[in-house]
Image (cartoon, rainbow over all chains, first blue to last red; front, side, top):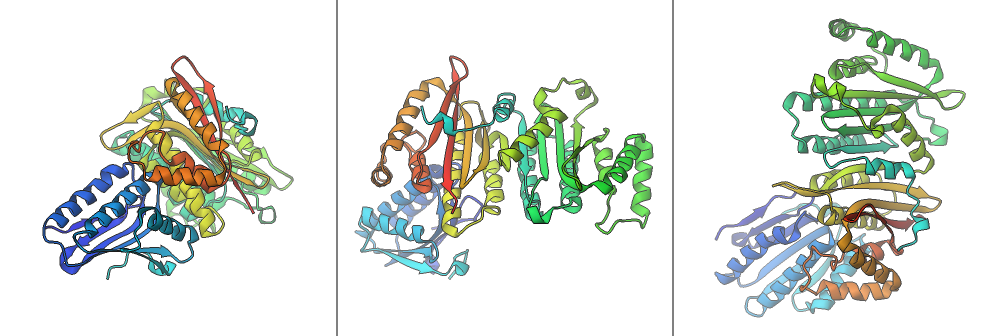
Length: 136
Length: 378
């Protein structure tokens, strides 16, 4: 299947899903005009990916420095979706936050708790200077 | 109703909003003029010009004049460092096919006569003379230490095809405020257009005075769509002082407020690419408070829900708001675009203050909805 690569803009994160390389990254800010529409592309792609032959473990690296409330709802939807996929296909989420951003950490902890993600999500502090757009 | 007495929107801003129609723009910035800020100011104005699909040549002219005007300020303003006074102003307004750029900056009084002579020389020239003069000055070696003084004014006069309207207002013993007001017309017939009062030189000078007194550094009155939001937020991100957490709280609140206008405002332009609605945003400072303010039009049939929702959120403690937020986060029944969204909850949580609002009826169809979110400054 084709990779999903969305370029980063001021209000949308970079999305780099390259199954061949085991790369599933979302990096940047997310507060688009229409979060539902933007995230639909991601959901559609993921649905197809999981319906085909996913990797033995799919690991997501999510580095979101800011998102608005409507994007946040889509993020919750994404986390819930991945949790559900994890029952059949092993899925991991590395959720990175800026070490200086205490509230970002609290947000992540809230998602972990609300959606009961302890099995698949890890919250990882990251140095501010390294948080922007790196690839593995 | 909210605590009306706390809103304090100066009357002149209500006048500005009520006289701005959906194709028009009023954008006033007052404060520090760094190269960065100038860049974002121009981006925002440019976005508006683009939306109005100006033809290539006029677009270039408008943009050129904006750049020269902003550069005139950044290069030539005299700053009174010890008072940290930031009097400089850049205003761009659009009415129908007419653009107006007004700038203000402090100049030392000893320079006033020299400037006046220069402005008069330019104003008394015909178009041809002006072009000749432009070449002359361009060739001359007599640039000032700040580079090209005078050339900017000549350029503004040439590109606008108009006189340079100016004024000097006493500031103190040593300084005057230098105002300049430039018209840019799309075509000759537009010169006969009757301009509403908010586009007059006097109105802008008065507005500048009020903004200064009320500590309002930025007013944007136009259509809010995603591209204009991006520019506004870039300007503010570069300007907000304080630690990461404080800055993020303000940006989060701002995004919610402005996107609320964009999604729910009543007077709308929904083109193929973007949707947006007419409204006003301004920032204000009070003693130890920093406030984000928006005013937009709402349909009267939405008012009851809006009031109910805001009064309810204001009646809750922060812990209760947080619980409600979590509950709503998992609630996918409501669509994201209705008032059941998280926006107001987010504003309340980030600011830790009650949301101050006012609804003013305009007619049987629509009302103004004014919202103010306060942040305590340490």
